[in-house]
Length: 71
Image 1 (cartoon, helix red, strand yellow):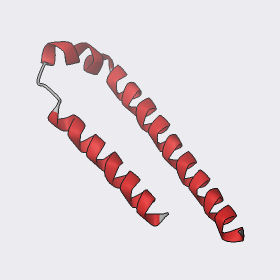
Image 2: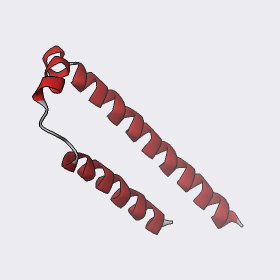
Image 3: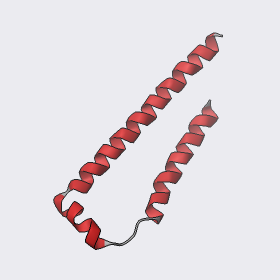
């Protein structure tokens, strides 16, 4: 089970780091979102959703581990 958690953490880190490589310097498209501050709201919502999913997966993993240990 620990290997799965490590694998998921590495996968998540890889996804986050790979998004930076695909980012382009197109300031014309980014200016309206940044000037209004909406980009930070979108990022906060995305991070909150991802953290919620990660916590949910960890809780399911713990429950399954408890069930496996009982058997």
